[in-house]
Amino acid sequence: MKIKIPAINKINLEKFQKLKTSQSGQDEIKYINKQLNDTFLESKLNMLYLKFKIFNDSFNNILNDDSVDSLKLKTKLYFDVCIPNLKFDNIDILSTITGLNMISLNREIELEIEDFIDKVHKSYQFTSGSLIFWKNNVIYNDMDFNYLKDMTVLYDYLIDPNISSMPFLKVNTLQKN
Image 1 (tube, rainbow, N blue to C red):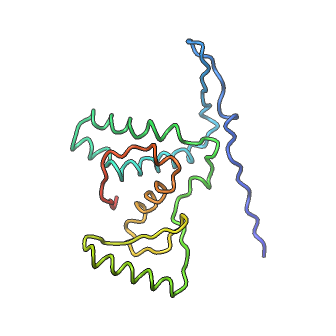
Image 2: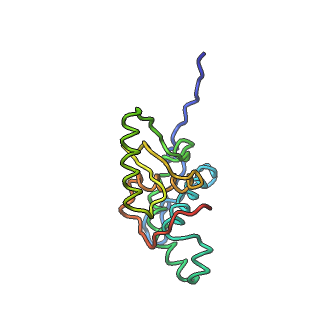
């Protein structure tokens, strides 16, 4: 039995922008909103917000703990770096699906990893779980699945090529919501 999977073409940026000369004489690129898929864009922006929330806190908590000015500053610092790095020509359904890639191990290697993790947990009692990556794939996970969304966001953050330019304002503990 064969299943045909339709090919998904990447968005060609030139279809969605037009060059416009501004009043100052410089060329500006304007995006044509109606041709970009809102669902894909919303998914990308949601992932950016989840990354923001892990490292900076939620908008509500920032407002409750600090002030509106603090929220404005934190969002400006973070999103001014992140939004320009969105690749509109690469936004498609495959780029919006997030998840952890898991690799199964043979039993011998898995037992060695579990032995190592047990030693780490005994030495550092404040640890509650472990997540081990190898070549952008999860090879070991003993964390509670309530944190799966946070782990996915953290994983996406770790493999992001723009990580060096993203500001850390405050590191939060992983949150369940």
